[in-house]
Length: 202
Ligand SMILES: N[C@@H](CCC(=O)N[C@@H](CS)C(=O)NCC(=O)O)C(=O)O
Image (spheres, rainbow, N blue to C red):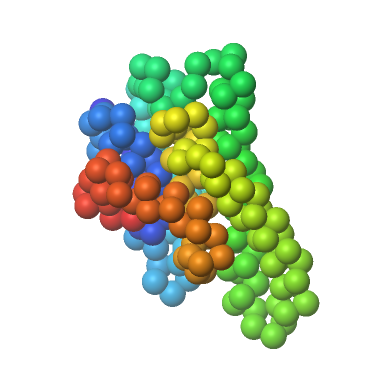
């Protein structure tokens, strides 16, 4: 059975959700963040060299990185679902969003989080962070203007991977990005998402 190493309030909710969408059985090993530092407990270092989540074990192999895990699960267990046919323009768009989430979109969101902790000392960085946020979130808002899903007409692994970006983005306010907010509502209304959260938390 697939083993998921899940940290509370983290990106690993994408993996439990993906597994529920796929209808696969899985076992969750839970870790709790330190309430003060928000860091993962040191036990995660037993399965991830950097002590981060998510991590999965399948067929005896342990590996990490959400995008790689989602791509693997869809390829191995999707039976044609949750990804476009390979060698199509949509497949390349699917890869684009699988990589864009952590490769580009998360950076300004994380910078905003960390720099806000600096108080006055962080003020000089704010204009650049805000302009990058506007750039990325404006791009996504436009991408979702005419469509419900980022690729094609059905949920794909790319939507699952981008869900964390969208959730963090709209946490700061729904009004500026109504299409992103609608995307988050669509995700959170899915029975598989609700099942994953009910079983394992966010
Ligand atoms: N790009 C990685 C990010 C992994 C990551 O930073 N996970 C966070 C949770 S959202 C974590 O484990 N934080 C705890 C810590 O850094 O101690 C992925 O998508 O898997």
